Length: 68
Image 1 (cartoon, one colour):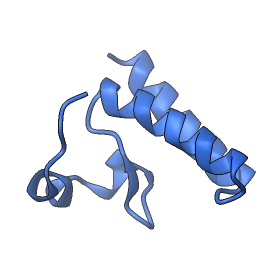
Image 2 (cartoon, rainbow, N blue to C red):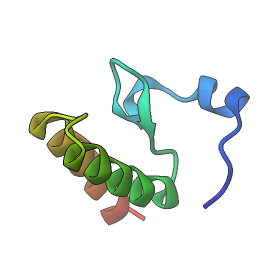
Image 3 (cartoon, rainbow, N blue to C red):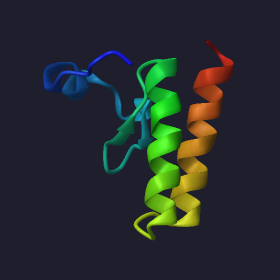
Image 4 (cartoon, rainbow, N blue to C red):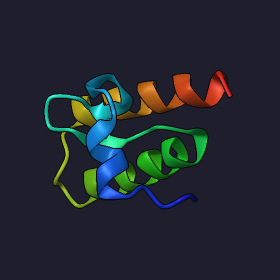
């Protein structure tokens, strides 16, 4: 996965995040989308992420992966 520097992360549109309101789970490319899905699953299993949030992240990541 390519490294996403703070400067580049800050330039991303809100729509490029799995949770746009919180600017969490950035997905500028397919590699980051796969990682976002993995991290969301981990956080959900630890009880730190709701089912709705995980579903939102997965849907956005799937859309990004399908379009690659």
